[in-house]
Image 1 (cartoon, rainbow, N blue to C red):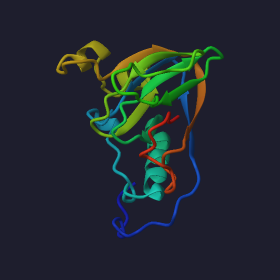
Image 2: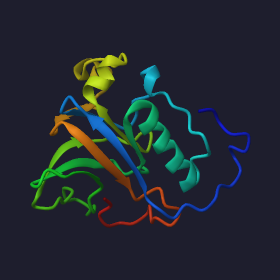
Image 3: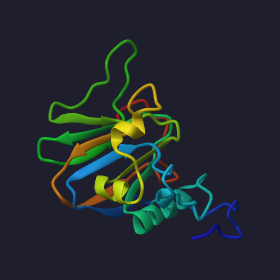
Length: 178
């Protein structure tokens, strides 16, 4: 998809949630803020991402073209957690000065995401490798800390619901954001 001629025009108000699905046949997900260093994942937004309508359209484009779950998350450095029932979530815990971030008792952190791009992206690890992505150790080699994380999941389809694309979502909330 290419950018529309009215790319920078104000878009219609988007009040819903972005909902997409991705397949994870390998049972492994790679999580980071930006997969676009590999050409296959370099998808241009069809509309301005200054509005929820554009964020929703971009997330759907990523899912359709590259089997990637995308979400705008702001400068929040979220974590990917797994609940005891197997549910995978990307959350930004409430931050309290001079304390470690607090997670719920029923969840384990499986990945942390540095948000230089203010985004979260996840895709099937085999999808990443088959389209030219380097092994995770090589991908992380140029960084001072791990920016790519691979973790195990049950193979299958995963539904990705993004609440932060709504034009009325409070991105400056100081509490936990899921």
